[in-house]
Image 1 (cartoon, rainbow, N blue to C red):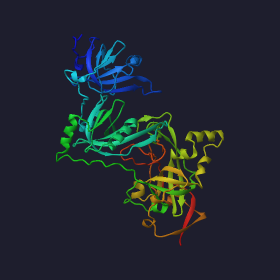
Image 2: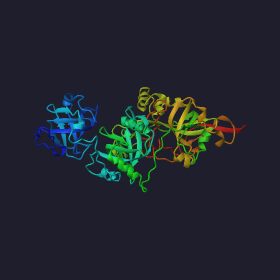
Image 3: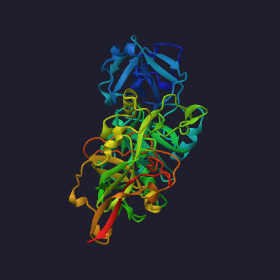
Image 4: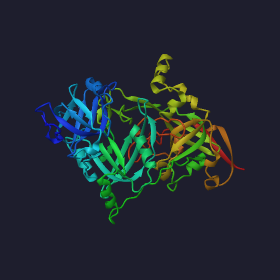
Length: 513
């Protein structure tokens, strides 16, 4: 055992004995839960730092947690005695590359170090083990990719905080941004509580540049592009008082260091347009969201009104060799989700257009899921025909929020994907688009009862199938998340529409006043 007043260093610990004595700062505390079922509590974790700048992971089993209830506070220094040292087995998401960890038990003694100033050697407030951003891509490909990493970079760009409900109807939020070290950049995504805290922190930070340290982040890749995200052990630091931040500032002042500082994100007001204005938009239009006040004239009955979706990524799946298969997740899906996708013709006084409406907007309007409708059909012995509840859209007024894509702006497609629906026409006048910039003059519009048009009369892209992903829901107020992927381009392709498929609506006759 160590002599009186002597402490063992973290790098000297092994499994040869139990009577160890260390003095460390607790720089991180987080809890572990199982990923299955009800998320069973698995134990409490701590990342320790000693005066030799060594870091080591410590663990407390749930049955011993009462022994240390409220004893440890993140950032404080403690003297810890009598504990075991274990060699890692197959644990993932490890904060350090050291192959051993500390296990505390009911025999362990813990004493707070009250006066740090009297310590012979001070323990730093925090310590990092940085990896070059350029090397993260190679780290992802390594077979032992079970370590968390620390990265540092200057904030380049950021998006607005997104709020949504996941497939299990649980509210979540995410915040995406990019950092650079001058030679490479990496995309980052924070989730839930950390997303909210990070979003608020950078909005309240006035110093430039914003230098971000992400400690113990998870590295992975999406579409063969590396990115980092947060886990329970992750912490972030903005313009922290650390030597690495000073070095990054010095590097940023060099002539060959270039980056574009982020601007404060402001959510633009969504512009209100008539259908005629909407159909005249081209690639020069610089907004991807617009709103239309329309009346739904018809719902197409000949098309399948729902699709099968992956229970993990939300993308449409197909039957391969008799089994539902998600090519994105590279696995079979035994019980796929079923999601609405209906096709409608809607019009206002200026014209008509085809719209594709998907979940969760359909479900929000009819207050039933696809499974509910299928059960109703079974109980009412309606067979597999088109559900009558979906015909309730017809004749009603709605405000559609539409996400414009390349087909609409570059290839003049007149089929639009609806990302949000509100009943009725509730529009602020100051958001309405300038009519003069889109139309040639006032019109008197009459609707004929005999004429009809098909979806082929609209310019429509030829797409294979739906690629809509996460089932996200609108919350209250201005906190809106569209039915869109968390992929890099956030494009929405909610459903495929074939040129030869037809919808029947009343024809619009236009007569100048």
